[in-house]
Length: 605
Image (cartoon, rainbow, N blue to C red; front, side, top):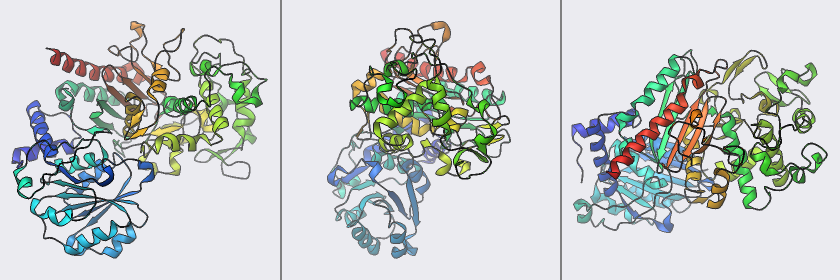
């Protein structure tokens, strides 16, 4: 059993208050030693039906109940990286079981966390046994091994950790959700004394949250990330940002910088929701097409007009889906619809026939997208067919194809097929319908079009006029949600026990598919022209992902097993190119690339 010295307690506190970030190398290595020891001593004593790690999260509504557990904040923070969890705090001497049952009535899954260093509460034992008859219960115990036997009598999933600390409180939730595999390799004399030697192992199925040293990267080699972030903020390239990096399914860097705005009233948080702009193309529209291609409901070599027969006499008559996905259909880049709005097209309040909300105090007339915008797009001249011309119109069109083929509203389709199964809690369109404004980063002070602060409504003007749900823009997400999605793609379509895509589909869409550009199908990719340094100077030819106009980027490098997420609101208060001029995203990606390469070179030696 590991006993914590004052020094190791300091190390644990350091990492949890500072987000696994920069510290002395010796401290990091000691942290890892303690961390691994606690993992090895944490036992799964019952796992009926292989319930751990939790799967099928879309079907679960989960509450966590804490009994006399002082590290519940840490435990709850880790739980919420995997799923939406409602926390309920209880003290053993003040338990009102009827009140608890009222609070958990609507939940089908309970994670019950108990400090068993306290005197055994037989009423609590009886209540757990009772509630387990109607709900799925996972029991998480911390402390005295001699008291585990009282809980083992219940036939429910049971985890026990002898150590009650912030570190153990971060490990057990990750075992429950599959971020950490349960191996229990080290013999524990206390466990053996009390016959707690029935060791059940599990597999890692989701992201793990750790420190750089666990993936072979030195924390000191990542200090430049801070420098680049602070430089960008000081130069007013963006008021704030969130940066995340994962290697081998392990999130080793996850940090927020700056504020929501330059007024500095709200600090940027890791959990903040950003308008991801064109990252929508590969997190919503392209995955929808991938799913329908797998199901043989869309053929890449069929004409788009086959799926949109209403427009067979337009420019779409013989344009192939493959051409659209490669930006080779000949569409013009975009149409500035916001400049074509007439007085009778909008009003400042929701009235009959003016129900499509564009922003606070701005409503456009119903069907404006299908009556005005889409016909203009589909009747625009195709002057560059066969050449690579990046066009938002491509994804406007593919969103229409997806809705026509599935018969399901696009917003609902991507939520049900991707975000809910992957437990991407905050990803989706129209975030103001689900979240408080304070959780969403404002995007722009729009003085020309909407004449208000754009906050929780899509920045892209065309997507806004389309009602906030478009194929090229409109998606909002957190860095953690995006890391989940792109770890799924890096893992060839599987994550958390869910098979989202076949590996062949992921390979097809993310690999180079064009003879005239660097593009995959929907996905952007590494540029072979070294002078462009795109997406970064050290990126490998396998790299795929996308950038977003609002100052976002996601890049996946299979050669390094790397997922990189960068979110910012660089268009606040108005559009500026400083983020690109400073090359912040490119330089940050190369800091991670270089750090990983250094660790790999060291291993080879």
